[in-house]
Structures are given as structure tokens and as C-alpha cells.
Image (cartoon, rainbow over all chains, first blue to last red; front, side):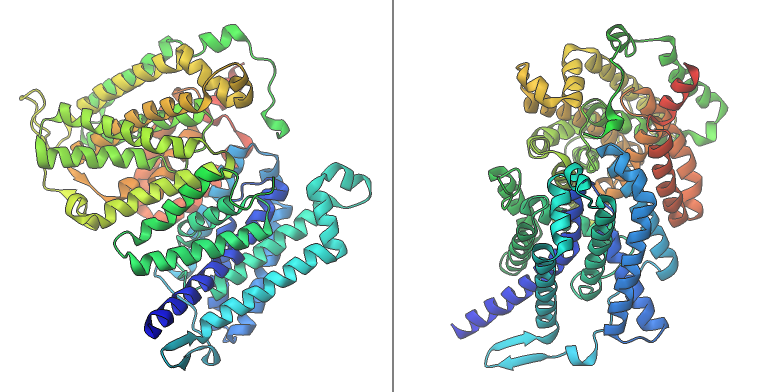
Length: 290
Length: 325
């Protein structure tokens, strides 16, 4: 009995940490989609670029994990900001099909560049010493790294929520979302708000990509492979809904982990069945407003 | 809606006339016959081009005419491919019944997965189409006893066409056989897009809500179109299986879905001719470029995709139409 509880607890921890990584990667996209109505399929690519940048910093510039995390995230934020000001100006004005195609084109460019610079093998970042190992108590074990992922992303989510709900910038963003024209009339620089939001979203994806390499290993096709789960999170969570994304990410992460453990033969399919069922009930997403 | 979609009021007479037969429709046949005599050693490449043209046509039906942004069209191609391979392996090596089975498998896949994909819109639709292809790939990978897993299907033979024409090493039979299937698909597409049904599909692309208010069962029509598209994609997959006598997991891959999308966009959507031109040029260049360096090719493809959407949204066909008028 104790063993059963212990197994399920550790599965739950695995599921939650997987879900939190998915949340970090998808939260930026849910905002760009819900707010700016841009179908940015290259979003997952920013997570990949973050992961690879951190790896380059750690192996070639001898930075520690935390330093690499900070520097790589800052670089991806910068990249997101520059791209938003240049390439995404074109993307904004395109039709939805055009947006999908242009961002797929950007994914192709990312995949090719990453392969050129880092090779095509599957890799993961080295975890620092203070995060390896487990805490053990009776039959219960808790991986330090998993605990770190959960706590760190919870903290980030909390910061995000406070920024959106309680700061002037958050109010400006919410105003720009609800009605960009009126927001502009009362003096909010809407394009600037969107640019900052976009860059921040890229940064969050990069953080997810960096701390999640043990769960979602780096490889050139990362940007496409993990696009499906990220899009699932957004579809099930409802476009533009932060809480929805969080709930959906946790739900999918936990169901996927339990499914793979208890029904190994059908494990890979359970998550898809869940998503199809969820969308049959609520085509707009389980947690969508209205 | 974004402003770029708005067009001048369509000329009704033109919108009916543009899709009817013209002398230009003979051009592919001139090329196909000409290529047979001019480029004898390249017939397998020619066959590959014809197969991709059929596949791109099938995508044009649902994307160009129906406005459905499917990123998982390989699901239908792969269904046809595996059906043709399994049919040859287990039941009969007759090519014609095999190709029919492949088409039906594609259609059936379209009928089953269509309602899942088409009842949602926007990014959710993109996700569902990707997910369907991923599930099919996963299924083909894990259901080893039937699909052969990562090894795929191999070691099946295709009987001579009409008991007389062998599928030889030089690919002459394969070439004409594919050309014949292309003829059938091309005529089918022409009929479908010019029928009242085809016009309602175009109406749904322009304004689904309005079509609904006019009493058109939007979802059912789209699923029907998706099934027809699945039939054509299944034929393309089946051809690929029969001509190469190999079926692999890559027939469900995103790379294939992405490639066929790029072909159609480069050529131009919603005119059938775009699919033909785009697939021809794409396969010709890819055959050389991908052999030299696959990842440089991917890089170039990404840039080409962005520039095409930005500067020639109608693809090559649209570009020349604008120049011509």
C-alpha cells in the first residue's frame, strides 16, 4: 500500500514537473495568440534556441547552470525583441495562412541553423551538482531537479500573475488586449506593449527550454516535435487564458505521465484521446472564458 | 479580419470561367510525353514528380479551395501508402485493385479524422491536423506486427500491369501508370471544383458564417471535401508504395506534410495549376539540393517560404497572372 502511494506520488511529481515545463513554453504563445492574434508556430523554436544557447554557454564559455540560464534567457529575449521589430512586422499583416507559413519558414531556418552549429544528436544540459540526487524517506523519493523545476516555474508563474494583475504595465497590456484602438487613444503605446510582451514570452519559452532539457531533450527538430504538445496545451486551455494554460499544462502533463506508466502499450495515445475528448466537449478550450 | 484578405468584388462570370478547361491544361501532358522521350534516364524522378503533383492537388482541394490550413496532410498520404503496401503483401499483387484500396484508405481516414479537424478553427485546427498525423505516425511505429514498425513494409511485389507491363528497373511502366492516375485525379479535381459543391466549398472559405446562414451544412461539406482530398492523397501514397515497393514511416512525417505545403504555396493555391507547377519545380530542385546538404536546403526553404508569402502571396501562378494582366 505504501509502495503504491509512493509510486503514484512520484508519478504525480513527474507529471507536474512535465506540465510546468509545458506551461512555461506555452504561456508566451497563448498570450501572443490571444492578444495579438498571431499564429506563431515558431514559438517552440525560441525554447529550442534558449536551450542550445545555454548549452553553448556552459560547454564553450564555462558558465555555471544558473549563469547560463540568465544569460541565455536574456539573449533570447533580445532575439525575440529584434525579430518582433523586423520579421514579425511582415507576419502581423499577413492572413492567417500567411502567418502559419511564415512562422513555419522561421522554424525551418531555426532547425537548419541549430543543426549546422550543434549537430543532429540528441542532447541535454548537464545538471549542476546541487540539483542532482534525491531526497528519500521510506519508500518515497523526490528528485531534487524535479522539485527545482516545479518551484522555479511556480515562482515564475506567480511573478507573471502579479505583473499582469497589479502593475501599470499589466493594466496597459490588458487594456491593449480588450480594445487596442481605445487603448491607443488614451495614450498607451500599443505596439511597444506588444513588443515587450512578445519578447517576454520568448524569454519564458527559453527558460522552459533550458530547465526542461532533461524532460524534453534538445535536438534540431525540437521546435517541431514539441510544437504539438504546446499547441495542445493552448487549445485545451483556451486562447489567451493564463490560468487555462496552467491547468491544461498540468492536466496533460499528469495524464501523459500516468498513462505511459500504467498502460505502456497505449501510453503515447492517451494524451491525444484526452485532447480530442476535451475539444469535443468544449471546442473553445476547457478553461476558455465565456 | 486582417485587411489583406479583402478583394475587389469578384467578377462572377470570371469565377465560373477561370476553372473550366482551357488549352493550358494540355501543357502538363505535353511535358509528360516530351519528358519520356527527352529524359529517358530520369523517369523515376519524373514518376516522383507526378506523385507529388497528385499529392499537392489533393492538398489544394482542401487548403486552396476550402481554406483549411492542414499541417498534417501526410496522414492521408501515409494511409494510402500503408494500405497499398499491406494489400500487396497480404492479399494480392494486382496494381489496379491495390491503388483503389489505397485511395479508399485515404478517403476513409479523411472521413474519420475530418470531423475532428474541421469542427475547430484557427490554431486549434492546425494543432488537430498535426496531432492526427502524429498519431498515425505513432501507430505505424508501434503496431509492429502489421506495419513493420521502424523498418516499414518491404519485400512485396507488384504484378505486371494488365498482366503484361512489368514494373521494371527503368520505371517506364511506373511512369505511365502514375501519369494515368494523374489524369484521373486531374479530371476528378476539375469536376469537383467546378461543381455546385465546389462553389459552396469556396463560399465556405470566404465566409463560413454566411454559408451557414444560407442553409449550407458547413461541416458536412468540408468533411466531404476532406474525404475527396483524402482519396487523391491516398492514390498518391499508394502510387509511391507500388512504384518504389517500399513503405516507410516517413510517409506520415511532418517533413512530407511540410514539403507538400511548400510546393502548393510556391506554385499558388486555389487554381490546380499552382499545385502542378509548384510540385514540379520543388521536386526538381529538392532532388539536387537535398542530396548536397539537407540542412542548407531546409534553410533556403525557410527563407523562400517567408519571401513567397510576403512578396508573391499568390505563388508563381499569381505572380504571372498579375504580370500578365
